[in-house]
Image 1 (tube, helix red, strand yellow):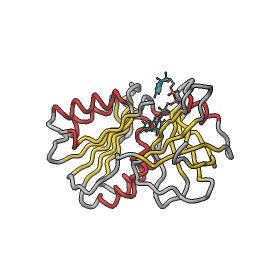
Image 2 (cartoon, protein in one colour):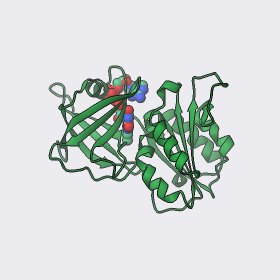
Image 3 (cartoon, protein in one colour):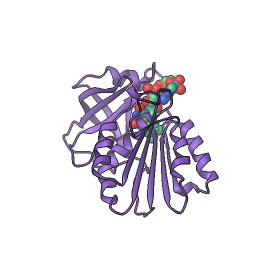
Image 4 (cartoon, rainbow, N blue to C red):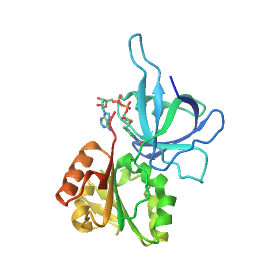
Length: 243
Ligand SMILES: Cc1cc2nc3c(=O)[nH]c(=O)nc-3n(C[C@H](O)[C@H](O)[C@H](O)COP(=O)(O)OP(=O)(O)OC[C@H]3O[C@@H](n4cnc5c(N)ncnc54)[C@H](O)[C@@H]3O)c2cc1C
């Protein structure tokens, strides 16, 4: 196992009925240096002879400067190798990890607006980016669109709402694909898929840079809509959560 380092689970809590928030630390006590938006990989030993090591990736949820812990949000996939191992894990358990990796990071660029779109745990990188986004909010706008099935599935919404309250240029919208009750929605809540928000936000290649993270179907559907609006691949950053 090259370039891996041992980590231990410090704390695990349920963020939603199907998402577990993990706090881990490196066994040698050193912090993990990373750029918000990056991910780490767990390496699970091969289960039998002739089998390969299993590797699974998770975006870093950690907010830089807040703590040295490696925070992750893990969605449960029934029977999944990593899901079963990490949902059963208890404080003190150790794992092999590598990273950080990934290029879904904020760059030196100056759109008039960022539109950061996610489904479920795909919103994790945007949580990590919050302080870096806040630094840019005096000269540009940021829209964060989180799509989940039901209200109970919304993860980290308190963090996004707290920033939205403090920074009027940050617009956080929560979209439910399987709720139907319109009357009880708050101002930041919407019915329908995240990509349906494009009709309201009217993104244009001159104004916007769009990030898409999470479910591959959402990413493909959203990217098609953006291409119809004239976006090129460089203006749409994508990270698909595939095994
Ligand atoms: C760059 C990157 C970052 C990622 N970040 C995160 C993250 O922050 N949080 C997170 O929860 N996941 C994330 N993922 C997905 C994660 O790496 C695993 O793919 C996921 O946890 C499933 O792994 P598993 O071993 O539990 O299931 P597997 O053993 O891989 O799969 C078991 C079965 O379930 C199916 N399956 C796999 N995933 C899903 C799914 N999502 N829904 C339904 N069926 C599925 C498989 O096809 C297979 O049949 C990320 C993936 C990538 C590539």
